[in-house]
Image (cartoon, rainbow, N blue to C red):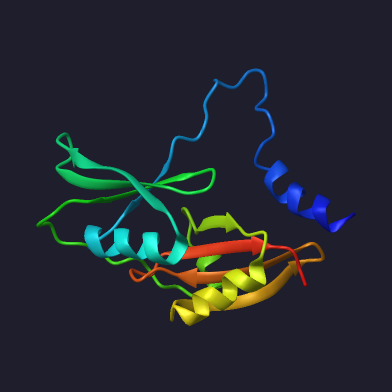
Length: 157
């Protein structure tokens, strides 16, 4: 398989059509509860290059939010001011897979080497760098300042 096809394959797997019996749903955004909305918004903008497209308040749940736009996805950071917070578990991989629930925000880079080098220069917490997961997929895994995992896929060197 040519390397251009490998990169396309990574995205194609997420773009398959649902069975005809499924409701016509599509992803709107991924919501991440955070302790410090301003600090986390700044981090996602400065480190991952996301763009703030909206800020507001959800009266129904008493939460402030920031909607961030990425390349092909949106991330909603949400926080209830003045309430006690439970920190994200920091179970290291691979044991994190023994806990049920969402595991990571998984992104894709066309230049995993360059992305990894940039993250290193920004002093981001790196769980692993450019690990080969399969013959056609390598990845770098990082944590945001509140401990949430972000997994970045790319092609092996």
